[in-house]
Structures are given as structure tokens and as C-alpha cells.
Amino acid sequence: MCRYDNGDLRLFDLRMNRISWQTNTRNAIVGLQFDRKDIKQNKLIVTTLESKFRVYDMRTRHPELGYSFITERAHKSTVWLGGHTPQNRDLFMTTGGNGSLNMYQYKYVPNPPLRHLPKNTPKHLC
Image (cartoon, rainbow, N blue to C red):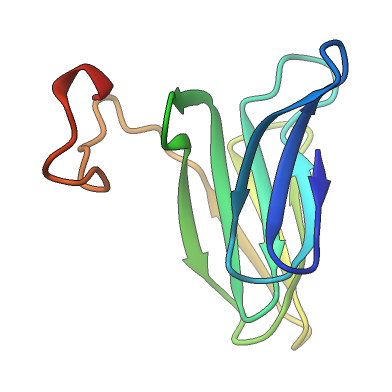
């Protein structure tokens, strides 16, 4: 995983020596963390400038649109760090440039609506 100050986020496949996925967050990325080190990753927290962070669900990947994610606005300042608790990977905390700490709980949606898809998207992509 690689982050850039222009908002680019890239996931590298080191076995194939290629970029397996990339996206742009529209804000400079200041922090990344997967939910666990010892098992296959489920969630990725990406913290950015301008009070935002994203949580990517690394189990759900659309062939053209990429991984599903949620964006949240927090702290009214830069979100410097995001970290999962070791005991429960659905709980995570973010730290802000204004000195505040926020705690969140991730909840899975069993059948998420496909609102982010354009109306003319073919059904085989859904």
C-alpha cells in the first residue's frame, strides 16, 4: 500500500510486480492502517487533510469501481491518525489536529444499496 500527498492511494501486488488497485481521495493522505496484521485484512482506514477519513471494505471489490468505502467528516481539522483496537477490529479511533479523539464502530450492511452506480450501468456489473 502506498499513499501520496495528492490523494493517490495504490495497492501493489509484489508477486506480480504491478499495481493491483488505485484510487484518489481528493485530499492529501496522512495515514493508513489495516484492521489486523495477523489475518487477511478486512478494513483499511485512510486519514486525510481537511477533516475527512475513509474506511474501505477490502472484501468487496467491484471490477470497475474498486473497493466499497464510506467517507466521514471528523474533528474540524486534519485527521492525523486512525487505528483499530486490537480486541475488536470493528472499533477504531481517529485523532484530530485540534487535540480531539473520536471513536467509531464499523457496522456491516448485509445487502448495501447500489446508489453510487450510474443509472446506465449494465446489470452484469452490479
